[in-house]
Structure formats: C-alpha cells, structure tokens
Image 1 (cartoon, rainbow, N blue to C red):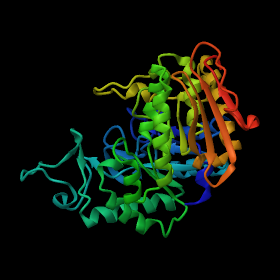
Image 2: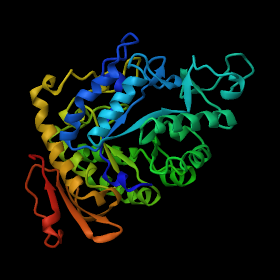
Image 3: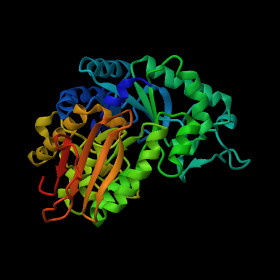
Image 4: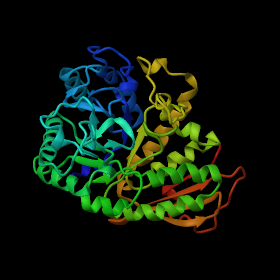
Length: 406
C-alpha cells in the first residue's frame, strides 16, 4: 500500500443527493456540480473525495444495473473524466463506492440462474439483501461473478480512481475479496480497498479478505454514545480494541456517513461536536468527513421508504448558498484537520489511555514506528474546568485540549 494513504482525509459525498439527481430525469450532467465544490473541500483541509454510488441504478444507487456506466441522472463518462481531472489539478484523490454483494432486479446477466443466489426452485426465488426485495444477491462462488468484479474494479482504476469503498463487504465471503485483489493489485499496487463492515470480527475479516481497511462502526458508536452518556470509559474501551484493528489494516474512521443520523442530531449536547472531531482526527485510521457535517447539518435517518433523504440532502450551487450558522463548525473542522495534516503519522497511531474519569480523559496517540511522534489529547466533557494530574502530558508542545466551550 502506497504511503499516500497516510495523508488521506476524505470528504464523503453522496452524489445522487448532493447534486439533486436522485429524482431527476436522465441527461442532466449533474455530476460536474461537485467540481464547483472542490475548492471548498481544499479549504476545509481534506486531501480526497470519497464518492457514494455513481453507477447506473434503479433508485438510490445501491441497486446497480450497470457497473460500467455513469448513472444517467448524474451524467456520462465525460462528466466523470471532468471531475477526475479537476480533482487531480487540485491534488485530490477520488475513491468510488462499489456495490458487489447485490444488484438491482434489472441487472442484465446472461445466466441469472448462475449469477444470483437462489432460495428455491421458482423462477423468482432469488436471495435478497437483508429483506430488500429490490436487491438481489450475487453468487460469489460463481467464477463469472468474480471475473465481472475484477473487470469493474480495474476499469475505473484505469479511468483515474485511487481506490474503492466496497459496500456491504461483511455480507461477502472474505475469500472472494482475496481472490479479486490478487488479480487487481498487480496492476494497481497503490490502490486502496476498504470494505463496509458493521459488526463482527474486524481484524479477522481484514486478514482473511486482505482488504486494506474496514469501516470502523464500533468506534463511531463509542464516540457519540460516550459523549451522550458522560461515560468516557466506553470510548477508552473502543480505542483499546481499535489498536487491534490497526494492527490488521487501516480502518476508515468517521463520525457521520450516508447511512446514519447526523452527528449534530445524534448528540444530546451539540457542544460535544468538537470532542467527537478531536477524537476522529487524532486516532489511527483514514478519517472521512461526511458532507454537511462540516456545516453542522442536522438529519435523522428513519426506517421507512425515503428515510435516508434527510441525511442525503442536495447542496446549493456554491458555498455562498450555505446558511451562515454552519461556518463556525466548518472553521472548527479546519482547525482540527490542520492538526492531522501537521502530523500525518497519526494515520497509523496507537492510542493509549493515560487518565480516565467519566467526563475527563487523556489519550496518548503514538506512532508505532517512531515513539518520538506523540500527541496527547485531553478531553473534558463536563461543564466545570478540570485539572489533569501532574505528569499526564509529557510533551506539552504537542498536546491538544478541548472542552465544551471550544
């Protein structure tokens, strides 16, 4: 894996929502709207663009019908090329969202009997993903399915992508990813492959699949939950487990994404936004900022048809169209991202608890390759000032402290 991933901080965009394409007619060339926001992303401090689904699909992008074609609601190949070129001009890398566990019902294959998993003898007895009737599961034991995924991964890496976030990776046998990457990596040794894994044995899945990283949902939950409950012991516990994950790969870390309630809505006290970001941007892994979170957008995910719409909104034509109240949060992101960029070794840092109470904690983040690279994060989530014990921070020049009023 190339060293560029140590410097990666993603701005995660769900294109169908961001561009207003979700319910648009085909042929609107909306993908290039993202180009007008790349300078905003640069000023935020990120180094890359993590795109949600952009391929032809039946509705929300995760019911793909053609992995080789840009969704006509977003545009075409020329629009993709323009976005990649504009990102490269600014030094931004782009990773894509690949959905290879399941496809939409209209996905054209020469032999549906072999490509799709079956549940019975009937003509429509195909396995579906987590009860969603429109998402038919691929049969990952079928060699043609493996060949197809290898072709898709290679095609878009050839076209300028730097890597992939693999949707619902947890539902795919890890041996399938191993087999696919054995064929793709020789041509694209610097590409990064991260899989969506929500629960289970993170380290085991990483090792068996040979993926470079997984989505760190356990840490995501611990961050907001510990802040809501005033229980930093939960966060410390998750950070201990996070060390094991880092030993196996480079996890994708986040405090918000396209599938969960917005952080500003999830937190009981919005003053804790800074605490959550401070953890995200000092622990090991590859951090991702979900569009809108940098402006303190609110939105609650609901378990119903259209329940994702609130967390996948359209952005205005330019930053001038954003509400004024969000810019303070944007500037807070800039401050904390700047810490990360000054210390790129944090991507591989291991975090150790130095001091811990329910509402105050000191965490030492250390480079496993060079112990001289060390940063101490001190959190006070209570309403009163807190005095940490003498000697908690041994390198004051590299300390970062944050309390609710910051």
